[in-house]
Length: 443
Ligand SMILES: Nc1nc2c(ncn2[C@@H]2O[C@H](COP(=O)(O)OP(=O)(O)OP(=O)(O)O)[C@@H](O)[C@H]2O)c(=O)[nH]1
Ligand SMILES: [K+]
Ligand SMILES: [Mg+2]
Image (cartoon, rainbow, N blue to C red; front, side, top):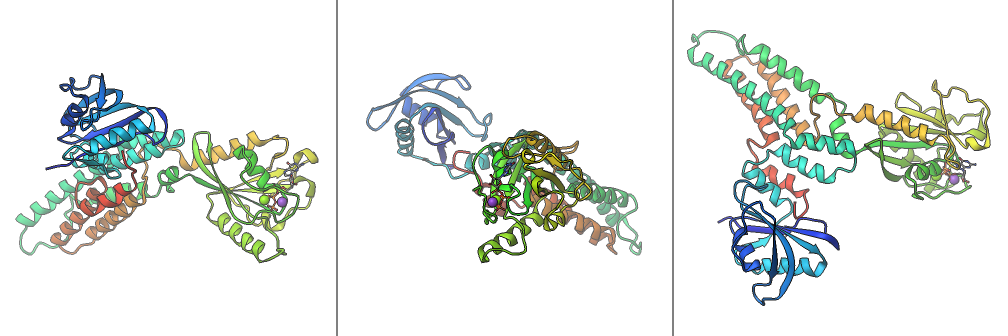
């Protein structure tokens, strides 16, 4: 018999309200055991004094709610105990539940996993639950909500349906064909497969925006020593994340801060100042890391020192490309006209006075929107989906050049399987462990 599971669903620690969720066939009797009263009507919030069934000790006056299978998040009988969020209250209730026969603490992600297993969610929707809980910015929330709504799952299931129909076509051809009829994919099926390959290619070729939106756009601040990179990072982060000093070569390690820029998630990195003559091997390693980070960043901010103009640091100049925002810092010390730098109009800023920072933020937010914005069709959000789609596309391409209809049919079957794995329609067993491992207990 299925175990009845329970867990604290809200964040641990002191809080106004803490919710303990119980799911499984024993959820109702667990509530009766704690409240000592008949079950309340489903979906109606009811006040109840909860007691430890073993000792009769009062644990809390709680708001209790119950849902009956299959009309619940997990698809099972569910009870929610809305407790006063004190540690002793929560511990008391958890211990009382643990002592009941047939009940055990939920594993990470187990509630969502049960929802999937009971057909309440497909895998992309389950993944979206995790993304929504992790969402830190507006754009991340939008993407997760859309995926939780089933937009991505519907796209993949729609593709799979088309393949199922194409397969039926080919199989009919195989059954009725003249023994020595040549050719692989039937003429009627070829355009369907070709069109799907094109749609999958377009979906894959989206610059990774969905995946990036989950993880944040990587922006690296680069420039000569003492240009004021760390000061700029601190000003943008509105806290003293990096050490600032008048000594050239202060920053060595890459220092990251997470920012919300106009609703988009950004990982902003401060790096060591670039120069030929590093003071020691530690700074040398810092410069190596700075270059490495600059090369991997989605966007760079190249910082120049206004007091050094018209001289421009050649190492920084060499890094400017189409993905670079050019800023001239310490504008408070010099107001001489700014030249074009690396073909771009630089943004004048002062990390000290704060002047120009709004313009720099706006420019970076525009970059983020361009790289991360969620467009008309839902975006691919995970490497797992990408791998399955590439496999699907490869199988479809093989099908097009298959010498026999039987072989084409097999390739289309493989392509359809790859799509089915994304939403969890097929081959799920080994996947579930991996996917739900990332969830925490109570989800
Ligand atoms: N007047 C003025 N001074 C600034 C400004 N930004 C930074 N400074 C000063 O410039 C010096 C170097 O600043 P940092 O932020 O440490 O420069 P950095 O580019 O991170 O330096 P390294 O880590 O050594 O490469 C410090 O003394 C800062 O106070 C600015 O906008 N105006
Ligand atoms: K410095
Ligand atoms: Mg620094």
